[in-house]
Amino acid sequence: MTKKHLGPADYLKKILNAKVYDVAVESALEPAKSLSRRLHNKVLLKREDQQAVFSFKLRGAYNKMAHLSPDALKRGVICASAGNHAQGVALSAHRLGTRAVIVMPVTTPQLKIEGVKALGGEIVLHGESYSDAFAHATKLEKEQGLTFVHPFDDPDVIAGQGTIAMEILRQHQGPLDAVFVAIGGGGLISGVANYIKAVRPEIKVIGVQMNDSDAMMQSVAASKRMTLADVGLFSDGTAVKLVGEETFRIARELVDEYIAVDTDAVCAAIKDVFIDTRSIVEPAGALAVAAIKQYVATNKTRGETYAAILCGANMNFDRLRFVAERAEVGEEREALLAVTIPEERGSFRRFCELIGELPGGPRNVTEFNYRISDSAKAHVFVGLTTHGKGESSRIASNFTRHGFEALDLTHDELAKEHIRHMVGGRSSLAQDERLLRFVFPERPGALMKFLSHMRPGWNITLFHYRNQGADYGRILVGLQVPKADDKVFKTFLDTLGYPYVEETGNPVYRLFLQT
Image 1: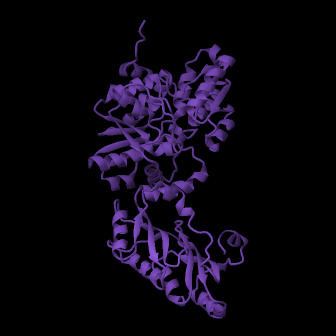
Image 2 (image 1 turned 90 degrees about the vertical axis):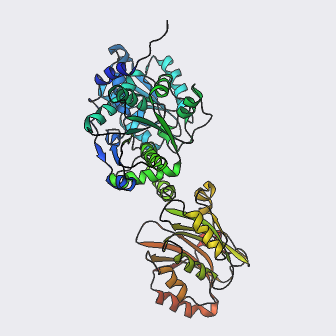
Image 3 (image 1 turned 180 degrees about the vertical axis):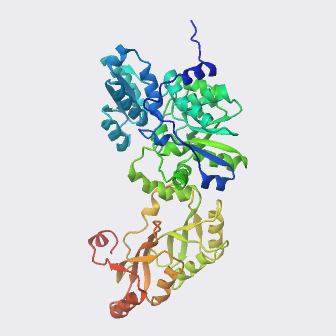
């Protein structure tokens, strides 16, 4: 007998009767005022990051468990999850008074693991991805007689997530052109698409995936479920190798369009959300915002209204360093360049003067890495602020025209992730080198003041600077200063007026930089 598939009308009924509000709240739908102004379109943020477990997942988990028989609840439940569904199941089990076993990939952020523990879940770590954890959970389900609570491929879970769309349409009565939804396994977009297509079919439902975890997009393109050999883990909440059977069927039938975004775009979107809300979402939570920006840029829209579901905010704090660094590149507010400078007196100063004379107005230097290594030429890694997208190649060409051969590294993954932190090392040319840490005020002219006060005979052998977003910059400088110039050098430092610490005797310097 052929299984009858549920249509939008069937799901509409399930969504209207979903039991979610024992644990979930009707999250706010807030305008992103700053982002809306920049995009010339109205952007609304559905704040699922404000749920009790900082994710929408508790809706589907609780709805599924609340519909279980008393006998099934008594035996306990089990789930596989990269984190957010796990917390939803753990909270629901606590509320319903049942046991919850949670199988999580070993790659799950510690924040999510601790969140599950705090809610009383029994954690089993297994495998590298959700799919690995899922296989182990189905084994434990049979062994222990537990009820499996699927994170996405279950009609009750899908219906629970669909209550988000119900709230959006109730909260926003005016025109709504599209709703952007992150996709991992497909439970959220399946619920959202069923409700919207049953009630307001003219509204587009646009699915969003990471470009390195796009199982749904590949499956829809192939007209069958595709299993990815590997998935990127930056957006761990959407790192799914194989989407669900039911979610694939629904997405193929009801989702209007798909967009893939990359890591840099997501980092920039996390910053956009922070600027408008002062809240920090996890990468999966920012996918929808990244897609809206990409959609507007591609389609050149103006005056439309879009909703983005901020689906989660469970991110380890120490990942913020990476996010902040890549956000500027993701928005192309920073150009990264490798510049070759002749190793001759005055060339470094001439290069810095050229930065101030670039077309389009002065640029702030965001990063500067240099270590003397060749008697004829020097290679410098430099970051510069930009005024808009596409400027990095023009800046590189301008440097080359003025005699400084430049290579645009703005979109080079090796440069962004590793090389920028590896410029340095020992050098046989750095004789009589003195190493100093300075605190420079973050204002135009601070570096030129330093260079103009230097004696012409003092050669710069090392320079490292990275803008940290404060009103001052921390800079490491190596200078070749003859012993006979010690007194004059001390006068130079005092006249300069910048706080400094000499690190020439530091054992770290001796180990890694000193000849």
